[in-house]
Image 1: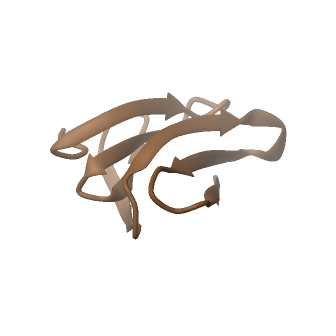
Image 2: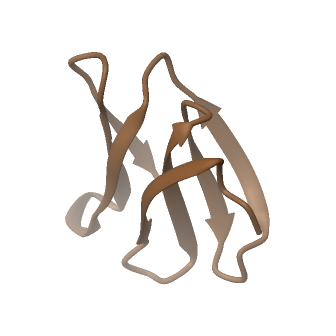
Image 3: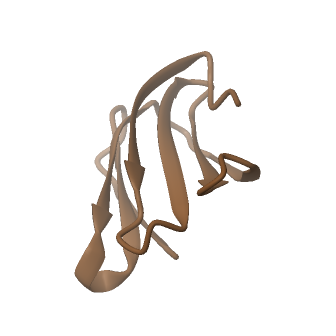
Length: 75
């Protein structure tokens, strides 16, 4: 499994079903299931500096480096 060329960090969903990786290169977040099978890549206009699990909201939060944005990605 490869998330990106330059992966910053990863987070696991609170239910343990998903893993998400934050990438500087390519500018994206990559979503996997718990067996690390690829689900989807979401491209951004920025490097992604970090991803976190927001358990009460059943989502991930992605912090973008080059633009003043946070992304919330529901699971």
